Amino acid sequence: MRKFGKLIPRLVMFIVIMACLSVLWSENSWSAAAQLLDIGQVLKEASRIAEEIEWKPGKIEALQEIARAQAAAGDLSGAGMTRKHAMDMLDTMDPPEPKDLNQEYWKAYKISLLMDMVAEQAKAGNIVGSMRRFHEILKLTEQIQDPKKRSTTLRLLILQQIKIGDRTDSRATDQKILQEIERAINMSGVVRESERVELIVRIAETHLEVGDRESAAIAIWQALQETEKLIGDWERLSAYQDIAVVQARLGEEAAAMATAQKAFQARDKVHHESPYKTEHFKVQTVIRIADALRLSGNREAALRVLETARKMTKKLDARDRTSEMQSAALRDIAITAAKLGNTEMALEAEAAITDEGYNCVSLREILDAQVKAGHAKQARETADAYSKRERCPKEELLKDIALAQAKSGDVKGALQTVDLGHFSSPDYIRSLAAAKIETENPKEVLAWANSFNFPEQKAFALLGVAEGMLQQKRSPSP
Image (cartoon, rainbow, N blue to C red; front, side, top):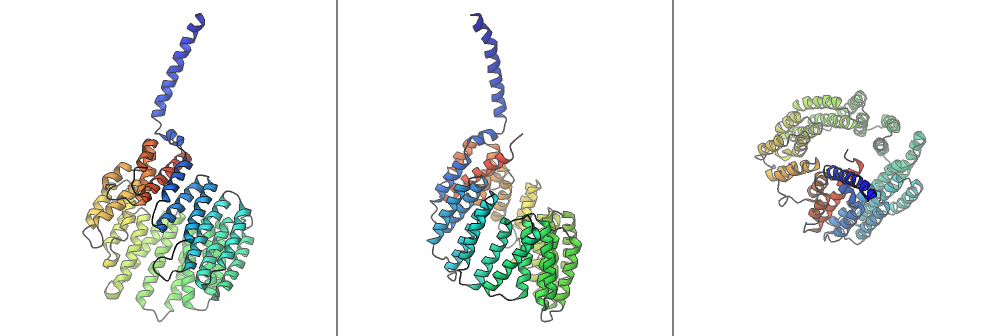
């Protein structure tokens, strides 16, 4: 009896501890509950539902997205099976409209699916396996009869090879890539030196994509040397423009603008082009440099260069034929400014557009920027103001706001902006599902995802649930 009496305080203490843990559980924003759901099983169910999508291109797209999510979750085997099924389905498809798309188009598309698999193998550390598959794809590519399609596909393969190749010796790697370029040019029948320069620039961009700035700089130096050898002014101006953009992507504002001046000088020598088109080319080059500086992370430099482009645009004659050119430049300035978070400059550029064909094209980026800045009310006011214009239906603008809110995690705000019954695009449902996981009971969110009637909606809802769970796993709540 005495022993039992001693156990009572311990039992009471145990009950108190469990009660405290229960309270902590309820306040942990459901992140632990989300982990109880199996991401792999959710994606497996999404894949099963995707099989019910009747429209084959839509089914293949859904399977591709699910495969990417499976790979991101570490299920490379499942991703491979899902992607293989998508490829098998691709083989059974008839070419869609327009009818000039032939089976070689689908062969190239199949290669792109295979390249996803190669990249995943490389990411998992299986470099030997990925390179073996790469050479198999290369042989398949060589069977493409159309020279242009073969050349384009080969270029993509060469660039992909950079991503999965040996990064231990960047200079040796660059030399090998240049040899592959020669092979691609020979196979495709392309003999123009400008094509070679273009490929080297693409190589520089790919080096940047994998974070190898040193190799990117080397490639750009090589591209500059090759460009100096070009004879035609038209070829030189295009090459210099592309090189300037990559230099800006490297964060080299002064070098980019200096190279742009070389492009402008070459453009001035092209006598058969109108002066209006020449000025438009210069403005577009500066806008591209500003956007590349944005991507480099140098926001201050990007805004400075974009302001230069804005001043250049104001000098364009907006009468008659040049109205379209000026409006096109203003559209691109508005889009770039919005991506930089400067909605004031973006709205000013949008308001100055005179050609109706360019009206409201930049509004999606502007509304997205306003929502990201926490100004959803201001975004709705912008939508109200522009809905009176041609080509600016308010319903579409509200959908853009709702999608931006869903992607930013504001589920309540997204549903208040537009009713789910009136806006049921896969992208919106996917983003909404991922956001709901952050704040709601995961099992209830899973039930919500399964409540959709159409297979495409249900598959993307489940995909969003899995992606939201994966994001929580990567960034657990404190």
